[in-house]
Image (cartoon, rainbow, N blue to C red):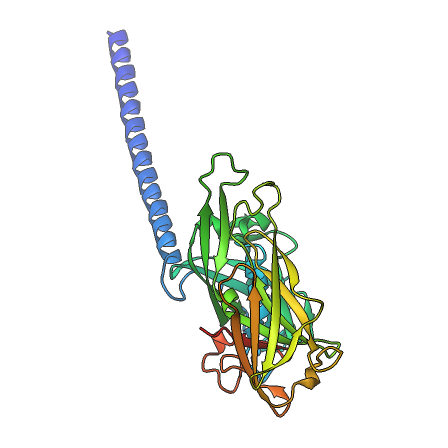
Length: 370
């Protein structure tokens, strides 16, 4: 009888333990389901947060900088925008910002390394949706502290809890589209730049390369006059090519030789030509925007054109590029022996500081005549 009672107790105990374990397992499963739901909810919220239109998306608020340091509004030089974005399509890097303060409102000097996560950053938008941001090193400062480089950090950093390095500094992972870069210094967005990222495909099954990313935007629409350190007047513009096989006999040769020449007119009379004997030859890289420059020689007597030779009048530049149906035409005026800036570059006339064409005091930008 005792054995029967003992066996009954053991059976009851085992059943009770089994029921208890079952309840505990069920509670654990329910807790895990709730946890998974919360995690998925956070993931959805985070993804939705990153896709917000306008200025949404996330990094820390940023340093409170002393924006009274300079009288001028900050900007990014136009030539660094074109070079930094176009010389290696997809890599967002190597920009020169102007008039960025290096002190906080409480007088502390910004430390380029310790404050990196809150100092210089760029938010990236694709088709008007926030994608992510990049951090930059602000350790390179020059021209009496009035210029600061947006350089890629020398070491990796954490973004959204994950390590970021050179391989994560490309926007090509996000695919083709219309992109906008919003430049931040501390807690202030001070500049924006728009361009298009395009993916080209090659249907040739024997091709060495089947796809290529290129950027398009203001590169074709602007040229400049540069006041060189030598005093010479320089003309510059940007050029690229988008051919997969520019040399039919040699697929490994991706550069393309392009001849180009420049004429400059003053008050409708030929005034100067590009320096040298005949056209200049550019070695244009595949899918990359190259900056081409030339000095000018006079047509009335020997010698190069100095910046000081630009007397008051109306000027026209005629750029002829091999393979283009018609010359590119740019116009500018000189008044009081100074080139008259276009309204987009003139700080007194520009109505949107975040879109200022910053030429500093040595680049004078000209718009292509349509």
